[in-house]
Amino acid sequence: MTSEQLHILQHALGVDKYGLGEMYRNHYVGGVEDCRPLVALGYMEECKPRAISGGDPWFYVTKEGKIAVSLESPKPPKITRSQRRMIDYRDFADAFDCSFKDFLKIEKTDWYKNMKAGISPASVLGDYL
Image (cartoon, helix red, strand yellow):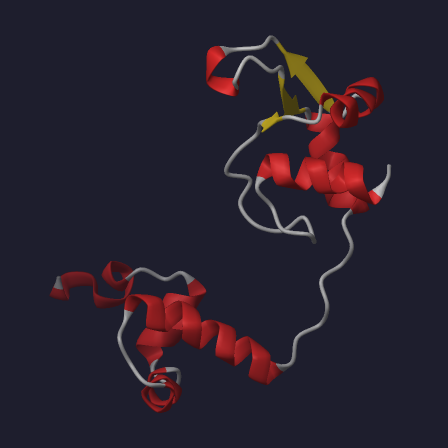
């Protein structure tokens, strides 16, 4: 598979260049000449033209195509602890308005650690809720 074909599959699924992220879509419109080789490989299926696709055929990624994306996508670069902390801060600051200095304090709390671990407040607080 060429890098252009891999990019088409990644774009159709809505994942990044490393094949990571939620596969929140599964369709691709355009580039019939680019997609038909992927259909021949079994990585995509072609669907009839529709008005919503501007009268062009549209394509979706098959199960084999999803597997190919995960196998063929390059590995993401390693990130340092500091880079990970900054990513966590940006994610946290999207929901909670705080400075980076405040985040560094919050990051040390049990509440934050439980939140990062996916532990719900109800399981921690129990009868207090």
